[in-house]
Image 1 (cartoon, rainbow, N blue to C red):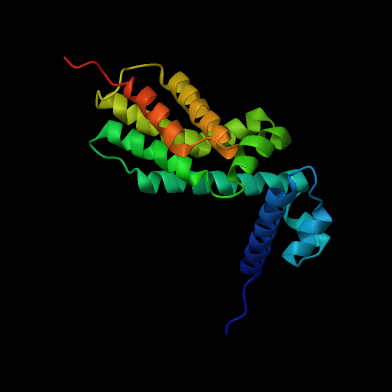
Image 2: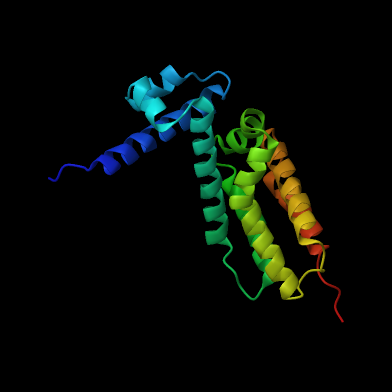
Amino acid sequence: MQARTNPERSAATKAQLIAAARALFVEKGYADTATPDIAAAAGVTRGALYHHFADKQALFAAVVEREAAAVADEVERAAPFSSDAMGMLQAGGRAYLQAMRVPGRTRLLLIDGPAALGRAAMDEVHNRHGSRSLREGLAAAMEARAIRTLPLDALTVQLGAMFDAAILAIEYGGQVEEHMDVLGALMNGLAAPRA
């Protein structure tokens, strides 16, 4: 068996830290998670933690980035671009609700993320991942004349906020199907008038 290279070892340590941090951030929350606990859970020294991440906030940002990328990937796999633009948007919405049901995601991306990193940093994360996917889907739907032509950035922000509000409601006991029915009806309201 060939020995791992330094970059491979470094990547493995970083992955261990992110996985251990994710578990603790979900279990205890950002504020109540300490870096010594993360290092111990990852099986590395605190020095190794600080070699890879400047501080707890930087490690949390890496966890959030990875989680947001996973959500966007799940949505894009479930709702690939197709000629049925409205169906694609509906499938994407349902996939987002499903992807966000993974334990801890709501806390990481919608509760602790904005509190620990700030709204502007979270907006940047969303713009690289989920909001980017939504924006691309909406742009394709407008181009296909499946939905009304509206200001794309404003529509992306408002639909994204609507989906996030539904996720938070579901997290606290709301019914997924009820929220999907309402979101679906609201998205159908965007349909372009037929000539």
